[in-house]
Image (cartoon, rainbow, N blue to C red; front, side, top):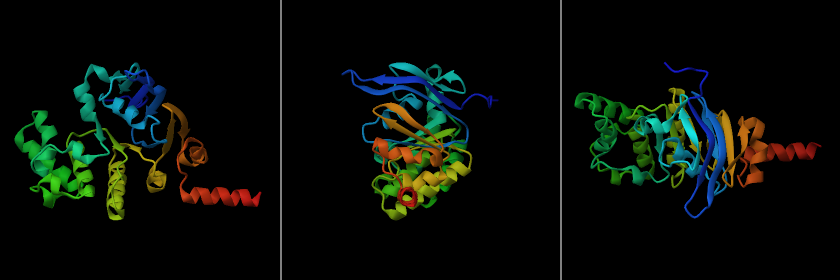
Length: 254
């Protein structure tokens, strides 16, 4: 049983320096609590994707560490990658199976779970993302939005604690955006801890309890959206229109 006083996930002085000596992220200290819905924003090249790829061990830090329930993730990377699911920006990179169902089954089968249990897990995961009727389709024939949902199903099948979304709205039409946003909200309400990388704050800000901004690899803004939203434009992040209008109105009233 986990200690509620210990963050679900924590980074301590997390730093990554590439082989060419370029600093991607620098001394990032962040605590993620159970039930958080965190948005990470920042201009292109600010280090967002590099940062989250450390959270499930896809990248190894040059300095610092990542902890889950107070334990360094390097002690068991396999468990870490089960507990911290990552949805890549390009869903095609996560497609492995010949059919939608086979794709979702890949992870659980690698956990050597009984076939009967894997079938149930796959059915539950597909139902959760609304892809049950597509179980036997070739995943490459799915729409962009359906591929995103397939990637989510594959992560759900691993029974994670945290789900990280890297720019999930990229390349989607309006109905696709609505479907993925609803999926995010549903997953959070179901008890998953959500970390969302996005530069489109207007789509999800109302659902987040924390907003973080990275700039040139450093964590420069952290707090509740209402408390820190006025700072984001200083770091190349577009402020949602409703907040721009409020700011303009306040300025006019002064």
